[in-house]
Every structure is written in C-alpha cells, then in structure tokens.
Length: 364
Image (cartoon, rainbow, N blue to C red; front, side, top):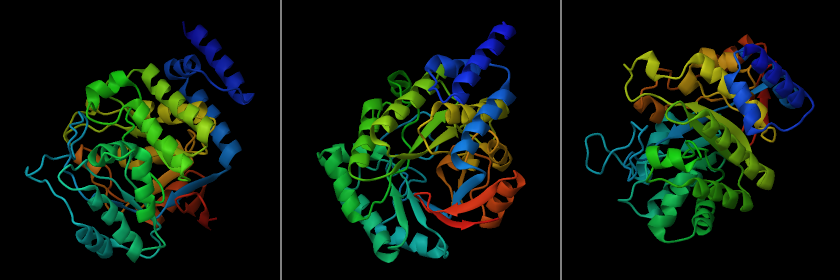
C-alpha cells in the first residue's frame, strides 16, 4: 500500500512541477500520503516560484461591532441572542471611540466582522463604516463577509448587488473571506443552516468582483467535513477565481473548540494544519497567496508554514475576539517586531503590505 501511495505522490509531484492543474483525486493523494515533507517541499517550490522569499504582513485592527446574531452556527462561541448575558451592539459612535483608543500610526486596515444582528437596520451597518471612513480616510475598510451580505439582502429586501453598491458608496474597500466555512451543502445544513448557501456565498464574491472589489477566502476545517469536502471547497473557489480573478489570498482556518480547556484531541493537529496549508498552495494554482493565520495555529506553526507554502502571516490585529471566544489559546495580537522576528527566523524576507499587497516596507 505504501509503495502505491509513494508512486501516486511521484505522479502528483510531476504534475506540480510541470505546471499541470491538480484534481480532487490528486488532492486526496496529498492528504493520504504519509510523506508530509515531500508535500511541503512541493508547496515551498510553488510558493518560491510565485512570491520568492518575501512573506507579507499588514498593520491592521480587528473590530467586532456586535455579537448579536440570528444564526446559530455549531462552531461559534462568539454569538449571543438579543438581551442575553454578554450580548452587545456598539453604536457607530462607540465603534469610532473604540478605534480612537487603540489606533496607532501605520494601521492601514480596519477588519470589521460581527454577528448577523437583525435588531438594527441596514443603516447601522452603513453608518459603522462611513463614520470610520470619514475619520480615517486613508485606512482600508475590509468589512462584512459574504454571509453578512446575504443577510443584509434579506434584511432590506434588496439584491446583493444593490447591498454591495450601497456599502461601497459608504466606504467599503474590500470584503473579508469569512462565512465560507466549508462550501458544500451537506456541511452547511449541519453546521450553519441559517447562513448563506454555497451558491449564495460564491455569488456575493462574484458580484463584489464585478463591482471592482478584490476579496479574500477562508476555509474552516477540522470538524465534520470530509477530505473530499475540503478539496471541493478549494476547487469551487478556484473555479470562481478562474472566472473573475478577484481573490487575493486563501486562508485555511483551523476550527477552535468551544472551550479553552478542551482536550488537545478536540483541536486540529500540527500535521493536519501544515498539510492543509501545503495542499492549499498546491491546489490553488491561480491564487497569489496562502495565509497562515497565527490566531488559530499559533506563532510557531505559522513560522513553520512559511516552508509549507504560506506567503502571508496576516497582521498585528490589535484585539481578536471571535476565535478566542471559541477557545483559541494563542495571542490576540502581535507587534511588528514580533512579526518581523518570526519571518526572519524562517529565513524569509518580511514585507509590510497594504490590503492589496502593495509593498510598504521591506525589512532586509
């Protein structure tokens, strides 16, 4: 059996090195092969050919204006019902005050994600970004996942295109990649039945790309999904990327248990984390970047991931809440010095970027 797998891996390696696109079956060989270091080597080769030795990061700030949410996703520890203990909704003015307390020169992106709060009007969501754009016009507004766009469409009775047009007029510059989870209906019906369907999630990004926005993609792995479903997810976003070219980066997110005291058996393994980053790099031949999200996998694995195909280490964040509400054990933020240290420690070149991967500073 192992000889068969080794032979199959050689076949996949030949396809990678000849620039041939991988199939779902090829992805299964990569997931099932015991030879993780060869897979890492392949992903590293692909990344170095595309990005050289540069690894990117950004000075950004996470903002979660509300945790009130109509959806009840099985993996979420952040959401609250209206009026429940711990439920909150910051007014646009309170969001601005929150940012003013934490803002430092150099922050180039506000990353805004929250609950699907049905107790406020769509104007609330518009005002939240417009007040920030008014006071910080130079900062990129990365706000509202595709699942939130679909929710806004139901909230207003408008098309997703009209919703996005209104958000862009208010100051929206790009969309985060959340709400994707796993893009198969079997998974979504079990884990996030009240949220956007696979087709709706993809359509929101298709529309955003048609309106000139560059966007992001995540994949939340490590729960009930099969390996085939992970690969199906990758292939579906790869196909949309073929169509629009609008995605900048793919972000594999290791699912977090509902409690910080959860057994290590309830968490993804280091082997799975590294393998998934590498396979993402190999399957997504039309994506510029694969991101290692240190919030979910920790700083040491994020550092190692730079030799498994990752070319982005995310950013400073300032204060991350959603993964930590679900049981993440990692830091809620990193400094620039720490990010540079991690990247240099992997013998790579740290590059501070803006949201759109324009280089701000190279740390030679």
